[in-house]
Amino acid sequence: MSVSEQGAPAVPRHIGVIMDGNGRWAAARGYPRIEGHRRGMEALRRAVRAAQDLGVRYLTVYSFSSENWTRPADEVGFLLTLLKRFVRNDLAELHAMGVRVRVIGERASLAPDIRALLDDAETVTAGNDRLDLIVAFNYGGRQEIVAAARRLAEAAARGELDPAAIDCARLAGELDTAGVPDPDLIIRTSGEQRLSNFLLWQAAYAEFVFLPLHWPDFDRAAMEEAIREYARRERRFGGVGAGAPLTARTGS
Ligand code: FPP
Image 1 (tube, rainbow, N blue to C red):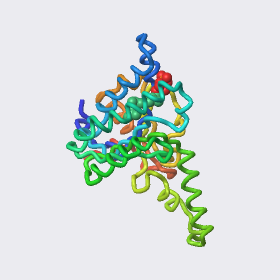
Image 2: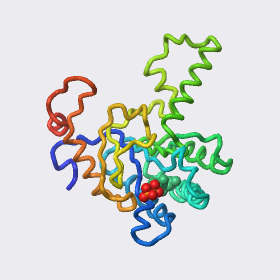
Image 3: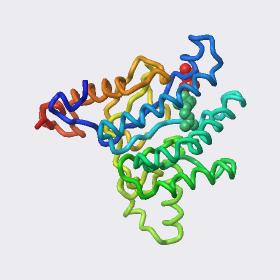
Image 4: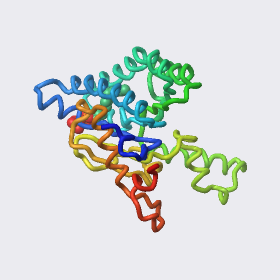
């Protein structure tokens, strides 16, 4: 079914996805882990198309965490290769689809050729406005907050910033996601129920949907299922709430 058939759009403006379970998907089939990641890349393509079709405006995907460097060298190498392949092979299509590509995470320590590819993908697609695809690569939420706090502290030490002027908006403006609305919905596949250092600050009021399938099996139907679940939630943002789930409140 299409989500709009419910008579209530209730489509999240921003969805974050923790693409988990590639390794388990592969192990269950007797394949090497990297085959799970390769198939995970195909699932990522389906997710981008589904998000755009369903009217999602921002999609942030967790593709490599700051902690993933501890994985075996061949797996890390393959994930770096996949990132390069994704940018090289898919950029033209993403651009034609009106997708703006952004990359968040620590970039300075990546190899110069990867940095150049990422910079190029951002520059080429900067004018697009149908869907922002935000790829979290070498990303960690704590590291992002620390870097933001350090920049503010440096500005204060130089006498350019009054510490009393530091508030939530000011700190958010220093994060990699500056200018991007907070995620409304975070989806994690493979049944694990944790955030794993993903969008720690930004997820303050996100709804979480945990899907039992492994990431390589993710498709449009899975995204619709997560959005339906999101639409049933009552979001209160710390207040007492309007007393009705999103479907009822946003219905025509
Ligand atoms: C988690 O599954 C997945 C990752 C660490 C990598 C995600 C990468 C992709 C979906 C491919 C697209 C990649 C890029 C770079 C664009 P896991 O390996 O932790 O699975 P497990 O928990 O079952 O072992």
